Length: 373
Length: 58
Image 1 (spheres, each protein chain N blue to C red):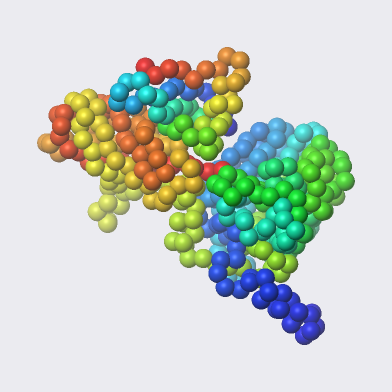
Image 2: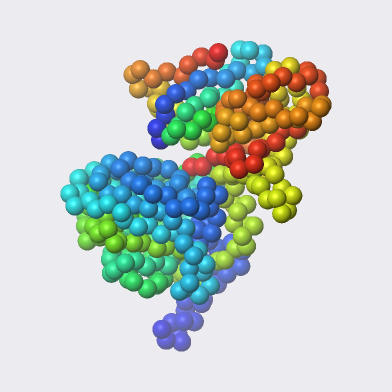
């Protein structure tokens, strides 16, 4: 790039206010937060959808033969980055049915997207950048999907070495994004697609969503070889036409952002540190066979969350004699709000009505709070 | 999202529905009655299918 071009770009960055303040709309772009666990998730595919590993990253895989393993990997060959998500094919899909599709995506709240001015005459360009590599040279599709029914896409290349890919999407003067806590825009990476999604004219400009125009017909499939891999990190989405350097956040800051959508508490055990389990909240024996207690969340949630306790005997409540009593019902919460919930369960043995208590998460057990999109 | 079973839970008054105990993808969840909650949204869709019902509280 010439000096003049560099200065022009710098001027654009300044005009778009891309320096200063938070630039990256994506959360956990480096896949460093993985509250659901760090072990490989195997056997994914064939109709699976949801959140399986790194926080905020969702997968949707249509029914088909292809299977893959997702893993959070340490990076040693991309200076400045330490973690990534790896998708590794484990079962081929040699006969791709028309309805098959594999999406890796992040769904974004409308109230975090108003700076895009989408649906107005001042609609801003959006630049998406990310680092990728794979087992071989390949082409995939990245796109934006507006839940009100608009879409745009672009292709990107993958080689065997890390490379930063940048795509700038035009501003969309149609379809304003609701200013609320619902999913209004999906940032999508397509790793596989059948004719229902590749058979039309690939949408490289914003258009009313048409399935057939969603994925480039020249794109590869992650399921075309059992040695196929896809590594991704440093995902950034920002207003403007320039991909600024990746905005690194502290671990604590990124974790807090993720916990607006999902949090998991573990009953960690460490004899060396004198830790066994985790105290959740104070409560009362509402009756001899019924406990009520406060369960505060770590972060205010996006919406009122669902709660799951990892095992039916994960909780214990202390009695006046300091003995512990296990719960026998794994649906133990109600009166759930944005900031806390109420434990309400019948323990395995009785206490004394009116006495206070402390609810404790047993060692190696977990409790999950989910307000994902 | 695979929903296998859903049952209302009631408040201490014994009548006011305040959440749903649901088995989703093999795990038991306490699901709030919040239209913005993805599990609740899925349960409502599941309940529209013939033969699926959110059971009354015990």
